[in-house]
Amino acid sequence: LILTITDYNIKLKHEERISATTGKMRLFRPLRSVLYMPASNKRALDKSLSSIKADAFIYDLEDAVAPNKKDVAREQAVGVCEQVWEIRQQNSQNGLSPQTVIRVNGTTTSWYQDDIAAVASSAADVVLLPKTETPEDIHQIDIAMDGKKTNMVHA
Image (cartoon, rainbow, N blue to C red):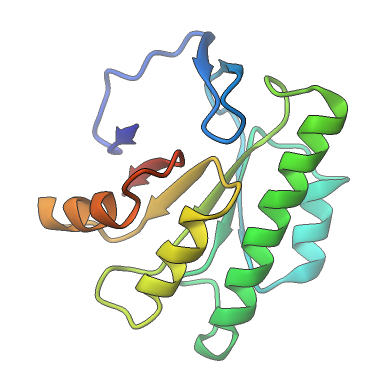
C-alpha cells in the first residue's frame, strides 16, 4: 500500500483487509488520531503501550531523534512494535488495536539502510518514508522491502 498526502481517493469507510503482520483478516479503518513520538524516548513508547489512546502511533527515527541516539531509537521502535503485536495476539483485538508506524530516516542519510533492514524484519504495520521527492525514492524502498509485508507510506 503506497499513499501520498495528495491522494484523495482513499476510502474512508471500514473494510476488511489481510493484516500485514498476522496474515489474518483485519478491519481497516480511517485514522482519526495519530500520535508522533520520538523512538528514542522510552517513557513515551511505554505510554503508547498502556495509557495513551490513539488510532496509530508513529515511532519517529528521523527529525525527532538526535544523531547519537539513532541506533537506540531504532531498536526501541522495533521492540515496541513487537510488543503491540504480542498484545494483539493475546487480546484478539486485531481490528481495534492501534496501527504501528515507523518513520525511517531519509534515503540520503547514513541511517537509512539500517532503518529499512530493521523495519523490514519488524512487526510494524507501516513504514513511513520522509522527504520523498522522486519516484526513485519509492523505488529504492520498494526494492529494500521486497517480500516484506509491511505497508509503505511516503510523505
